[in-house]
Length: 212
Image (cartoon, rainbow, N blue to C red; front, side, top):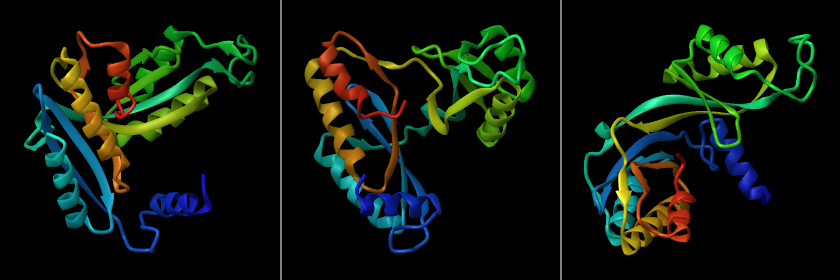
């Protein structure tokens, strides 16, 4: 990453812009054909400017600013490595051994997780209340000796996702999402879309521009 990019990232981590101004958070809600609900998380030193510019981008690329947040809920999500790298935590596990999911699940629920599952790479995924995510992940990592890969607060769908069955619609959606992601104040983009009868290539373009 270029030094300028590193400086911006450090500043944002401290709640400031690269100029030192304080950052505000905002959410932009968008609808896109065919009935795709989108939520955009923003962090900016000029919230009104960012919202205005993003509304323009959304309209330009076929979207409509409309209420969509009611189709999502805020959830904490933490991902831990499925390999146990701390042989001191449990004498029955050697370094690099795969962690036992049933044991992890019990420990995670005791720590305050609401649900536990595995992802495609067999990493442990914890779902928590938003205000408990970091603590639950840290507590579990200490107990079972797993490395925390990520810890985020995300927008999660509360109802069935909408299938995208049209290649043209998938292309328009991918373009909108890509343009929005390129806007510097956008932190994350979520949508209630899932792959329908479209090619893998068309759907990959959509997935690459989403944060969930």
